[in-house]
Amino acid sequence: MKILEYNGPWDMTLGEAPKPEPGPNEVLLKSESVGICGSDVHGFTGESGRRKPGMVMGHEAVGTVVSIGKGVTSLKPGQRAVIFPTLGCGVCEYCKKGWEHICPNKRILGVNAGKWGAMADFYTCHERQAFPFTEEVNPDVGLFAEPLAVATHAVNLMQPAQGDILAIVGAGTIGLALTMVLRDRGFEKVFALDKIDDKLALAAKFGAIPINVDRETPAAAIERLTGRQRLPGVFEAVGAAATVRAAYDLCDFGGTLVLLGNLAKEFTLPLQGVTSNETTIKGSYGFNRDDFAAAIKLVSKYQKTLEVLISGTCTLEETPGVMTQLAKGERQAVKIVIHP
Ligand SMILES: [Zn+2]
Ligand SMILES: [Zn+2]
Image 1 (tube, helix red, strand yellow):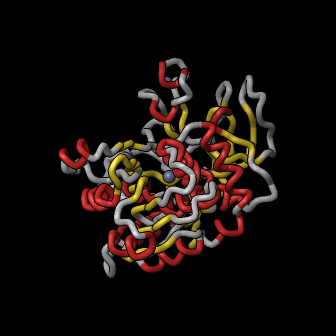
Image 2 (cartoon, rainbow, N blue to C red):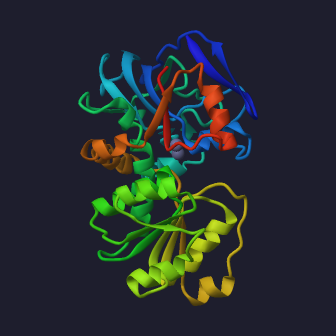
């Protein structure tokens, strides 16, 4: 079978590997749709250090079960599944609390070295990682279960009060997913901040109030529309030092800042502000199984809206070129889907 091998920064090639066999409690899937995630692009360039040479990427995935290993009871061959990429160790205190996503010994399909991902003709995963997915929804749209679960998790961590006015810094895939989750939960005023008008136009389609930070000072724009400069909840979905600071500056006294962006190694915040304003700062990473199940429901509910996010498709052969274009910023895309 064909696999897409990551050899090191800016280097990805098509290779051959024997078709894997599902081990006990594992399923073998035929790869149908694989999303190119921002984290794959930052891993491809070596910038994040989160992808290791010799691996196969691909953690946003929908596939069809081809065969099942010993002991598998939840899935049958022929069934379509959307992949929950994380597999916790199952025995540590975090896993026991349902926090598989922060298990120190977790393995993530297509992210950790040693567990090949979906950028291949076939791949295996534990049956716990394959959530049944309806045949009635476009499999490409099923990929949005991942960013919607990331957003669901972050919103659950913030626990905004009904009626709160909220802001999201960054209108990329995660920013849009946050908009969708918040609007679905009845939050009427959600501001989306970005520099790119195309992204802001999509955020507006998803129900956010767009602010182009190159043209308008966010606090001034928010004040004009709400009468206040600071908000009780702000999500940061870029991960650069400057955008974290911008998000913090919008966060009100006693407010909550949830950080999802994951790029800069360090950032600086004013200590006196954080302590004396009683700012709550929470990191949000990935999602748990409940978040994922909730996100799969959102995918079905909003499939028509989500379809506009698919900017293009490519084959495995074309993927290295597409990755390069995305990394160089030569192509602006919300989601490119690989069809192996
Ligand atoms: Zn992803
Ligand atoms: Zn664990």
